[in-house]
Length: 288
Ligand code: ZN
Image 1 (cartoon, rainbow, N blue to C red):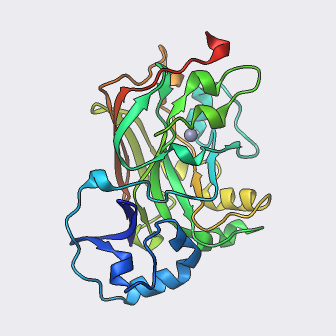
Image 2 (image 1 turned 135 degrees about the vertical axis):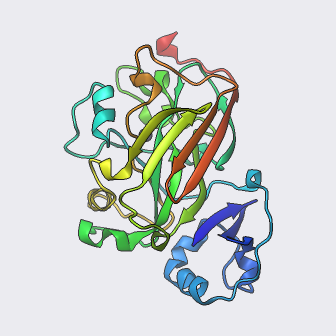
Image 3 (image 1 turned 90 degrees about the horizontal axis):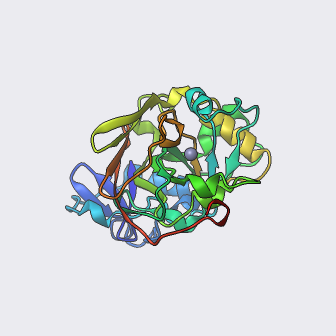
């Protein structure tokens, strides 16, 4: 099952096109693309049995963030070995966690406004929580996952790394810095949800390429470690970290420029496409 947000409405993407859930369920499930995760078991049970109508054609530019109003967004740093090495940092013993504030969420296709000339890319697998998780062991963790989707953890490196204490959450939360989609894909659609090919290209030049089996902290371990501290709630997102190949890790460094198109792909999940455009200029005081 592929669950999307089409023009703000909960939608199933089927081989024949888009099916509006509120209409197909005669109102049993509302149109809110986030609220459905609080009724995940009931919803998947209905979706399995329902005789869905033929889908309608849709414009992909009408797709919004697959989960537009999660209660919490977690993002994990340094979760692939080569990326930790290119960042010049030690391998973590606990997952480094920050947030991407909710107003940075965006749909899977569209413009990315660049507030500075030091915006970087980070292709990431994103986990969507389907059942409240508190003190969940890694062995039980997949039972709490609704599905997987693609995310970009766009990062303004000057703000992110400003001394004396780095500002990961702010530097990664400019508007549009967190596109997610095109759909939440349920685990039954994937041959092995813990080993997916992931890549990022800029104007056709492949800058990142890895497999999600390379995660230092796997999805089950992340759910175990996070839920040991606080509850994970239905609809919450976990950005699981990016592999090597980011612009800030290169010599010389490379950052995004207006006119460039970033395509982020994960096997079985689809792709994101962002076109870089000039944004409202931003200056970090400590760096000016
Ligand atoms: Zn990241």
